[in-house]
Image 1 (cartoon, rainbow, N blue to C red):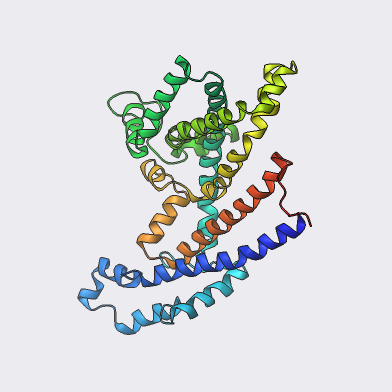
Image 2 (tube, one colour):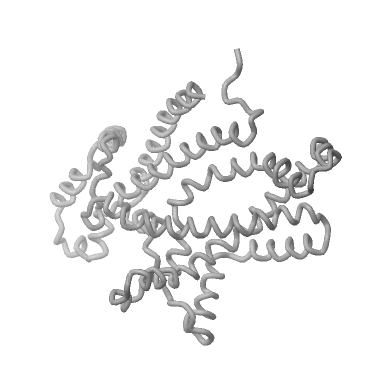
Length: 333
C-alpha cells in the first residue's frame, strides 16, 4: 500500500499544478480589472484623479504587468512556503481572511453533514428492506419533492415564516451572533450561535436527504439480492446481523466514493445560503473575491479546494481496501 500511496502523491503534484495554472490563466484573461473597476466606481477615472502611473504601479505590485506564465510561477513560489499574498480588496493577508471565514463554513457544513447522514442512511436502509411498500413510496415522494425545491426559495421562506415576518419570530434574520451576546457566559454564547445556525443548516441539509437516501437504498437493494445474503439467512443468522454485518458493509463501497467529494465541499461553502443568511463564510468570501478580481484570494481558495479534492480521492481509494478486503490497491506479482 505504501508504494501505491507514494505513486498517487507523485501524481497529485502535476495534477495540482495543472489545475492552479488553468485557474490563474482564466482569472488573468477574464475581462475587467480590479484597479479599473474600483476607480470607475469612485468616479476617479472620469475625473482624471488617478493617473496612468498609479495604475501601472498597482499592476506591478501584484505582478499583473508580467506575462501570465511568469506571474503564475511567482505565485507558485510563494505558495510553496504557504504565503497566499495580500488581498487586493482591503490589503489584508489572505491567510487571515481565510482563517476568519473557514471555521464558520466548517461549522455549517459539518453539522449539516452529520444530520444528513444520521437521517438519510437509516431511511435508505429501511426503504430497501420495505421496497414498494407504502413507507417506501411515501418517503420517496416526500424526499423528491424536497429535492426539487430550490435552496434560495426555501431560505427566503424560512426567513419569512420563522424570522419575524408576518408570522413567527423564532430565529434571527441573519448573522452568527446577537449584538447583546457579549455579556452572556460561554455556554450562553454557544447557544446563541447555535440559535443563529438553525435556519442556515436546515437550508443546507434538506435537499441532500433525497439523494443520499435513494443512493443508499439502491446500493442496499443490489447487495441484499446477492447469493451470499441468501446463504447467510439460510444459516440461521438473525436479520439484524445479515443486514448490518453482511449487507450494509458491502454497500459502503459506493458511499465511500461519494464521501470523497465531501472534503472539499466542507470548505467550499454555499454562496446562496451564506448570502441569504448573511453568513461570512468561505462561499461569500469566494464570491466577493471573484467580483473584485481579487486574484490572491481566488487562487488561495481554489488551491485549497483542489488539494482537498485530490486528497479526498486518495483517501477514498485507501478506504476501499478497508471496507472491502477483496480490493487490492497494488497488483500481485
